[in-house]
Amino acid sequence: MNLKEYIRKRDFKKTAEPKGQVEMVASHHRFVIQKHAASRLHYDFRLEMGGALKSWAVPKGVPYTKGEKRLAMEVEDHPVSYIDFEGTIPKGQYGGGTVMVWDQGVFEPLSDSPMKELAGGKLHFRLHGKKLDGEWYLVRMRQDNQWLLIKAGEDMTPVSAKLDDTSALSGKSMEQLGRSTEVWQSNRVPAADQKGAKRPAAKAAKPSGSIKFIEPMKARLMKSPPAGQWIYEIKFDGFRALALKNGPKTALLSRNEKDFSRKFPEAYDAVNELNVDSAIIDGEIVALDPKGRSSFQLLQAYDLGQERPPIFFYAFDLLELNGQDLRNEPLKFRKDKLEKLLQKQSGVIRFSASLEGKVAELLKRVRKLGLEGLIGKRVDSKYEAGRRSGAWIKLKLHHEQEMVIGGYSNPTGARQHFGALLLGYYKNGKLWFAGKVGTGFNEALLEQLHVLLDQLSQPDCPFANLPEKKAGRYGAGVTRTEMRRCHWVKPKIVCQVKFSEWTRDGKLRQPVFLGLREDKKAREVVRELPD
Image (cartoon, rainbow, N blue to C red):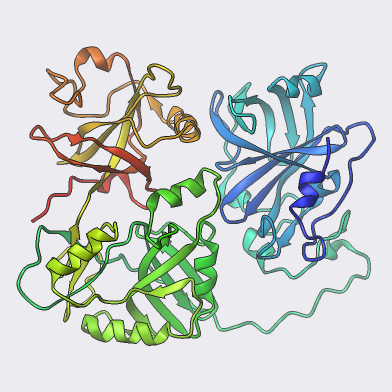
């Protein structure tokens, strides 16, 4: 065990994390799970072994049902003194964000040589904590730093939402810990328990505000714009988001009201710093490639643990400003207000300017730049929350479509984990099979998707139009014989694909996987057809 990598990644003049050292004493077999709201919320699972804390990042948390698997990414060893770390790591530092001691206790190795077993890629143990009590396995996958945390023994009742947000050390919530200015010290005693300790004077409370979600307005897919006065904007390839600020409260929400604040902290911080009493801004969170183009695949690459790309929030509409509802004002009025608001703001928030010129010429320019297409909006349009009225339209240069994953096929040749994903969309309340996608994956993505899909396994096919009589001209169909070789999953996961065209029998031709869409509910996915 050594702490070189741990020390290399941290500036101890700026972070209150312990520098520590490898403890040259017999292991006490303690464990800690720390809930960590860094760039992405995850749970850090640590076992005291060999004088240090062996550590794994578990994005989805601990499994509770026997046989349930969770991806666990092995990270650098941490000092034993880190076992009580709770508080905040400053922005800009490695792992910057809020850390909670989610659970702690002792673990019982269920083998005579746990160090040897761990080195061999499998560890069986029992946890005795304040929240967890039971058996688990750690099993290494083919890539050295990728493991599975698997529930063994009996099922365990999942921890309640309230307990999930309560520290096992201090009893505080993540929000309370994030607001705390207390500097962590090794082996500290909570201030409330120290004899004669004085609590810091409470700051005067700011006036409270409330955050009200408004469902974003939708654009209708069109082949060409109808008559009338239109303005055009670049169609971004990212996550649609609503930025809300009201007094001291700030939120960054997806189109289905999921919290994006921890996933995209730079965008959240930029919204929080807006010099306004209140505002609601509609826009898109994007990752930019070296040529400045938005790329959904870059957003997905970061989710797979790769280098974080530059993240920006492109703002294109203003729904409310300082208590004034602007939704019934014409679009040009709202955009003028928005542009003025963002003139002196952080570079993370960018104004999505209108493009000038005839639509045919604009589409040529956009195609030359390798962009996805254009969004057209009527100059005098009101903001129609949740509606796809036709006052906003999208003109696509490439075929892209959200799809629901309903199963996967076996791998062939040198490929591992799965061969292709089986995709569909909802039609009259039923899931309709639309084809298979087998390209767009790397080894890490294949492995992680397989782990995710394995947790959603079900015996029955979810597609209403399977089996098919023939495989079809391009092999996109699934016959009764082929169905026997397929694995079915609960249709809960949405992905994005690009493709060359829809075939005559309603299948995707030459689809390529782009990434997962956590901002869309599966039941909302329908086939997009231009008017």
